[in-house]
Length: 230
Ligand code: ADE
Image (cartoon, rainbow, N blue to C red; front, top):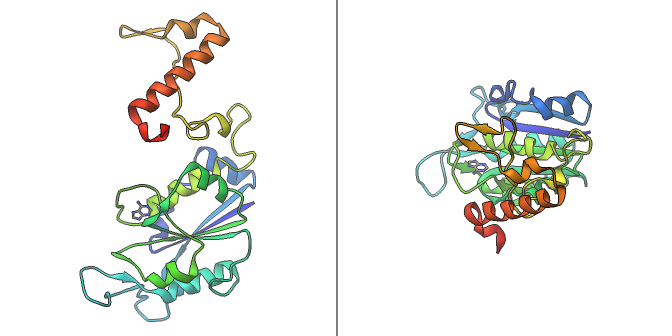
């Protein structure tokens, strides 16, 4: 069972987002647990303050280290920086290393993943220095917080858990696992608004279909993601 513990100032954000499809089934099958925790639970002041002004000046607020350290220590049961093998502590921010299929695969072997959602202008750097095992970005754009990225991370990792996908689908043949984008798919009707399904797919010749799919995957990759071919 992989346990996700998401630390956030917006626990309600995650309301029903993990109650659908593969994630719902993985939870029901006992492969996965996902819980969102309110960071303010680990504050000790009357106003539950989680941010403060930046040293050195500048706009915006910075998330304070103390509640984040306490949250991770309670959730992992270990002192900061001493997290057990099998436990990953992830800070989501645009400054992280890129989330890739390979990284999702690696994370899917963990027992516990604590996910810290950044907010405001940033997170006190001592969190990145000593508390986490990795800082991850889901892409080269800036979200207003790590919460949508946490949903992406849980989804990408969950579908790689052994038994999460039905036997009819395999994570091994999907986009990125092969190094190429996926080939195009068609279903009925064979002609729709003047657009015909490629004849080769209707012919039933498995060798030709396989060759066509490989060509198409390569074409799509050249067009949309030439960087993958380098
Ligand atoms: N928080 C803000 N932007 C982000 C991104 N691109 N990835 C992960 N967390 C983020």
